[in-house]
Length: 489
Image 1 (tube, rainbow, N blue to C red):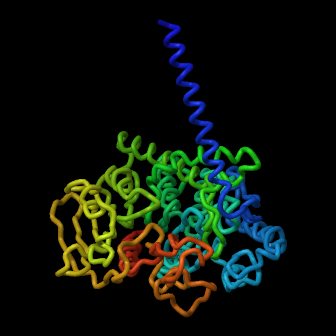
Image 2: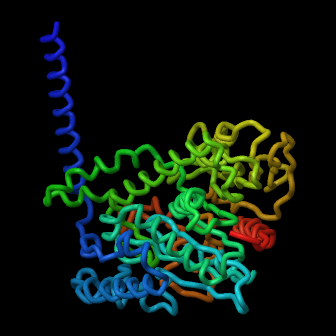
Image 3: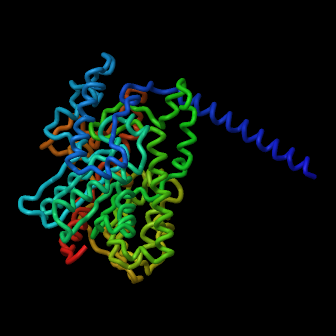
């Protein structure tokens, strides 16, 4: 009997080895196609380690950041080959999208000070491949209320996409702690403290709040605002590390990248390495494990109220995970989930994938729920866009007119659209004229022949600004004005 078992195991191992070789070879072959790796893909600037971040202050971080950008100027910009000195390259000094020529380079960390002494502090955490640019409109709102806004450039961001090939999510978390220390230093222990996180920054904000439950040395936030939070990722991210295995062999270095695209966005990477997806996935796994364990132990009651904005249709993160892994686990603590429904009056509604029509009812647990639920929708053609509100602990849904509407040619929002107003100079559908970043990505309505552009139309077709942004600001505004000063930490 034993020889038969051993023989079966042997055959299984041989089969698995053959399958692994086939997959390895297929990935290596596929990776060899497409655009070549450029200097900004290969170069990895030196960022502060977790230990250095834990010991540093804001001024130390800004000094290290300035050194990184100076290195980019000498090692990338001043070393560009002639073929790379083109207008659509953000690293070319003569390009209209070169960030160094703008009045403010929004790739860098910044602080927005109120006119008088700050009455509170807020920390802003941007998303993966993103930069501090993405939350500047909300930072200005907080400043108008007397808050000091601290927006940190998370390690490996705002520089070159090659930086993401070596970063670890623990460095992002250490940078988050540093930013909170600076926010608290500027206000003292009794002023309100908020954290606003977009996408991967939303996961970091929630992870920090959970860490603060255990660690008395960490300042506890009074409110979290999460925008398209990276609570759960698509299934591919789980295996992203395997996709990069062929890159251990130098001839297959491109296998370390999921996409290699020209860098025509001044404030966001277009190219995306495998390690970026892998680190984001590891962060979400750590976050989910902590949420489930703390829920079981009854410790989530120590979390502050959480206001979450999420698009029903999101290609990057799992909307259902935002419901099940976050809000459904929370106690009744004043938390709220705002869901932006798809445009059910869109011209393209007949071409939508099966199942999207009923996704909203499938992902929400039946009321009563421990969190307030707001759905921005136009499901009823007679009433137009409305908000459907179900208060926490109740089963009654109430509708209110919104006064805003979906553009007719937009069938849904997207993961990246929520924090940008329609008049954002870079991502807006109707970009304003007070700023010029060399390109207006949100206003492009591409029509023409395939193969003529330097990128696929996929990214350009994605909704990049939010027609309901003023409503999002109003809801955040309510949370700012309702947060009292603390009597103790």
